[in-house]
Image (cartoon, rainbow over all chains, first blue to last red; front, side):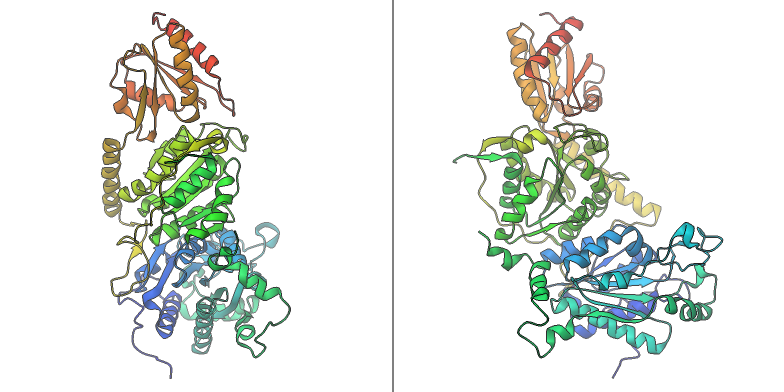
Length: 279
Length: 351
């Protein structure tokens, strides 16, 4: 049975500062519910980013660090490498993760950091007032693309999860949306899988969540959800792009496809035991 | 205590491990590469975490994470990398996180070269990132002193909950000298503000954001009080033959070694010279300037930076002359002795 009422233990009972109709609130709730369900609240450390979710640390009842713009995966790396039995997650928007923090997220994925990344994509810079983001769709009007994003001039939008799914250190990569109850249920499952990827020591887990920004999109919340369905989902297909849980738990226990995966597992993450083998 | 021959960078790394450093994140840059290489080989043996970061930007933010988790953390770099780290250093200061950052200085600006220099003086003493950001800066002049100062740096950083910078140069990093290493210590338990998971306690938040002007002013005012305490309590310097000196050279780091020999030579030539060697660059050891030579000579391997602090400390009581070589050029003792003698003559100091 799915709990549909009541505040998750991992969510603080304070009003959110987000704009009316913003979907950050839904995503916060999904993350908090996941933390509760996995029973890891007391050993979780969150990393907040810069953007609308800069104050996300106020809402989760877990330890939190506030990171510089784009650097959350590096901060999370620092935490996880010294507290290897804790659960560490970042909560980042598209400007933070895909623009200024592109290097940090890519290399955290390449290293297979045992962290979970909650990536909220609303295709725009919300906090600074609606500028073009790396995920802004072609033709989309923003305050810095007043005539609509033209690929010749402003380039094309980044597909982050597709990039991340190509990295061997990434154990789980999925994109979901929070535009309807059915999609929210799928998003909930993806978030849990992204946390499990870290808890089961398989690698980095990332979920991209297509979100809305009614204020900067200049729409009512209902229209914004419809716009996300009509324009963002076709451009950013939903679904799981990478999931190593089957490989790990499958019946072919000894050594699945070749020696490549296990070897990579050994070197990507922890430095402790393996390194002791060296003189 | 027995002494062993060690390269400066390796001694720095070993001393850090012995001082309880359990997290090192760094990016390759000459002339400090022996530090990450040493850490990669040995930090794991001590139960610590080593990561070669994708950039200095990432390295300093990994430091932020580990320091916030209550672990003794260190990174090392050189000028161009230090520039990239200053963003993160400002956040470390704003969030009150202790850590140690060594800048093994090389020639600049820009890519410059990999030869020893002191041209990051303003950057380490004035420019630790945006905002009202400051941290203690320690300047060793021997490999032994590098060991001693890194040992001191961690508790200093924790006492004030601020980053401590070790400003050395390529010569100190690369040269080998005999050193006595301190016994290893166990790192202290995570402090009461560390984010280690909210088990049986309230959650903890590490942040540098204070949106209300009055709140931020309060935060910075508290920082300022700490800065003033540091200025009062943490000035460190060494005075050499200054008691009867008529001209006092002010020099730090590698150049202070050269200056020491130059002072002896100048004395041989009849000039009563002395040396004041700042060990802390910030706070600048103004208290060491309560002597009254007839003139001062600021000598630095940069194009006129530390001389500003010398002028502020002398405060018009006597003329302050300047001599510098830069771009990676290190003056010889003979060269500097000649400068001392000619400066003394110019200022009418009898020889």
